[in-house]
Length: 77
Image 1 (cartoon, rainbow, N blue to C red):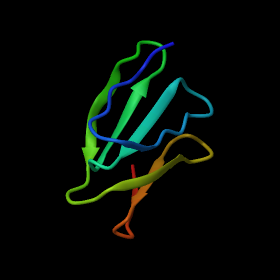
Image 2 (cartoon, helix red, strand yellow):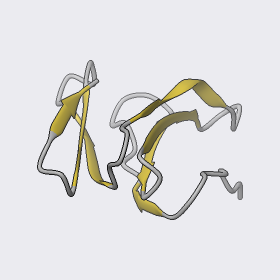
Image 3 (cartoon, rainbow, N blue to C red):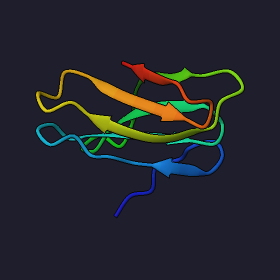
Image 4 (cartoon, rainbow, N blue to C red):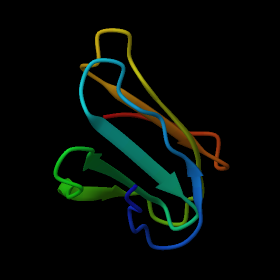
């Protein structure tokens, strides 16, 4: 069992279907990738100013992540 830290509340945590990667998005506007084996963040989080991120999903080929928030915008990562 491991707990990943995320600043603020978490709204979505999809797991990659092919890799040991989790993405966390939340009220603070951050989207952070985390490695499930090492339990460490992967790179720096993406940040949306003045945005509460609500949902995230991996593409079918796992090359992209899309996340969206309450401002009505989707970001392809």
